[in-house]
Length: 335
Ligand code: ADP
Ligand code: MG
Image 1 (cartoon, helix red, strand yellow):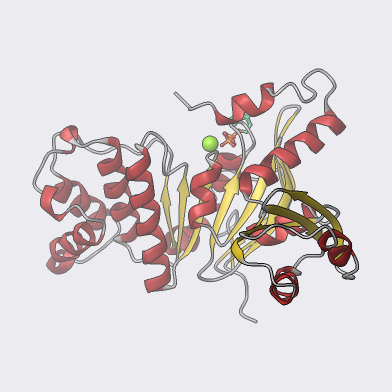
Image 2 (tube, helix red, strand yellow; image 1 turned 135 degrees about the horizontal axis):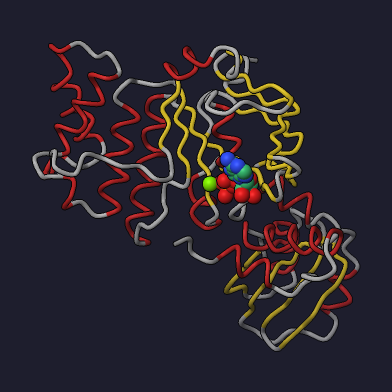
């Protein structure tokens, strides 16, 4: 297997007595879109700064594209495009002028810098606005320009700190779709941080749930859901058209993978082993049931999130225990 693009081992950052990042181990592979997910103050930005060699770890090592980010920050910066959460532009310059300026700073030859900047603006969907001053840009347009800024030096990895902050929902959707498309087309590795679970769920191959400087869990959504909900029965809801015969419940319970059956008029709720749906459907058809709907209950990031927080809070805090306080602050929009 190829060497990981990003590898963090025991990465720790202390600010006086605060462990902002606490013994973080993480591996991100080429072409992956990884979401660093956590509330404000979790340590996401601090982790990113260590990855870029912009702040020194208290202990542990961050390796990016094979380079130690602390000891060798220059090659890391050459390979990584970084979009900070407070990206700014020269307001009196146009989008194209801003981008050409950044291109020059990145050492792109004069002969090609304008052409490259135009291409980038096209890629991020800003070609129609390239001659407008960035002072007139919406937050969403600025984020797109920020992405062009990051991409112009043709990086292997892009790191986006809270890239969707302040964009309206439809803008967020388009922006994340763009990131996904670029990543897939160019084999780009993407690390993005967010405290918006829905958005991350939409775009990331894998997420890490990060709270209080610690990575509580990491994996793809299905794996996380599997680990968390392993002890819970898998629920299939089947809607049937014809009346349910009184013996059906007993018949269903005779199937090895079925644990519980609830009949509510035309709706059957069947709890059993993961993946039992095809067997159930076959069985019901054989029993002469006219099935009009089958739905598996699946768990998304919302449930995963809540579950981790519940567990985490119950273990670590008595004052905020299941008060919802923590979660509310989690979902609160940053000013
Ligand atoms: P996130 O990006 O997840 O919101 P940060 O990495 O910005 O979190 O911050 C993690 C913790 O470290 C917070 O408690 C924050 O107040 C603290 N912190 C961040 N930067 C500094 C700094 N330069 N000096 C002291 N404390 C800091
Ligand atoms: Mg941050």
